[in-house]
Image (tube, rainbow, N blue to C red; front, side):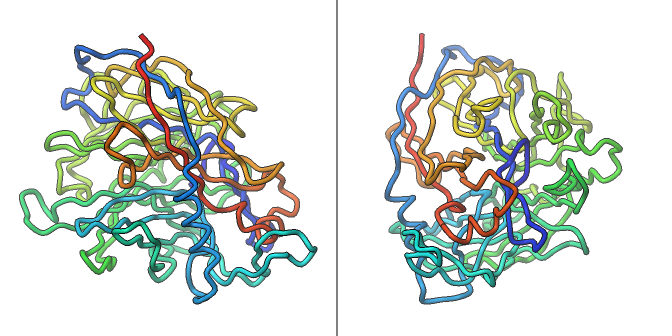
Amino acid sequence: MPDDVRARQRTGTGLGLLLALVLGAVLLTALPQGGRQDEGCSPHTATAWTKDDRLTGEFARYGDDTNRTDDWTGGDGTHSVRLPDGRVLWLFSDTYLGQVHGPPNPVGESYAWRDTTAPLVRNSAVVMDRAGHLRSTLPAPLFPEPAPGQWRWPVAARVEPRSPGSSQAVVRVLLWVRTAGQSPWIYGVPTATEVATLSLPDLRVESVVKVLDQSLVPDPSRRVLFGTTLVDEGEWTYVFGGDDGRAASRPASSAYVARVPKGRLADGAAWRFWDGSGWGLVPKPLAGAEVGSAFSVVRTGATYVLFTMAAGAAGLTTVTSYWACALTGPWHGPTGRFSPALPASGVAAYNPQVHPAVSGGDGRLVLSYDVNWLETTGASASINANVALYRPRFVTVRLTRTR
């Protein structure tokens, strides 16, 4: 999932990655009217966080397992959804498969490593059992390239009725289509939003449909891709998206929101976009927070809290937050900064995402962040020499009312 300064980039051989940092987060639960303010709304911020060593360690255990050579060993663009039978489906963008060796690595360092033949695919999905153990990687890539020079990155997903009122459930996965391009579009030119339908319980891809084509928007930095996060409210699913403003050196990217009746995520005709005063056919930016094209959101009481990587140089290391009384803003902040742990120097954190699928019921939020090597030279070799540089890490965050 690309964005602002995302920490991923390919080398000439196609094996290095530097993904855009500062993929903001709006964890929003939307109100049907879109702009109404609820009584009881108050400023909130993240006042405490701790490392979630169990989840971080589970992905390290699974990635280091040498029993298979066609499974996940590292990836970014981390999203999750809980399935009706209690399993959790984890979705990733660019992913390494293959086998992990060591430690030590070939130069004697105490890191597990991949060799240079490790396959790299554009997306993957890993299944976690009810007990919280990762068990299998679905055939990868799960979503094939739509055309030469294009690829699909999965983002948020939701279990919903196959159609409104249906008793049969399916998984809908939002996909970002990007097309190979030149600088500043080294992460691909934003092209379209698609929705894939996966059957249950076998998670077979049944169909992929395009719900919003952006290929004719002349300025790529103004193209909007939706699906960074989904929020259910009543009979609606709210779908948030962002543009690539920071790729074009604008101070910040803009956030957008659409809403769709439950059961109709795969029906492009059912989508309506917040246009500044109501729900129409043309999306307009939400007011307030500086975000990237990827973000995720939570509601606490009557308040919405948005997590994002901080602006400027701090965006390489620091998560911050905003708050609002309505999904359309205005957003207030930034506030509540914290700097999660990084596995080595010269490494960036990006793409903070909240995971309701594994969050506790006591007010704690499980938040993941992706990590990657910052330098363009030797990025692929560094990622392969230390597999921890390209795996999600997790923290537990608590929100506190500040007045």
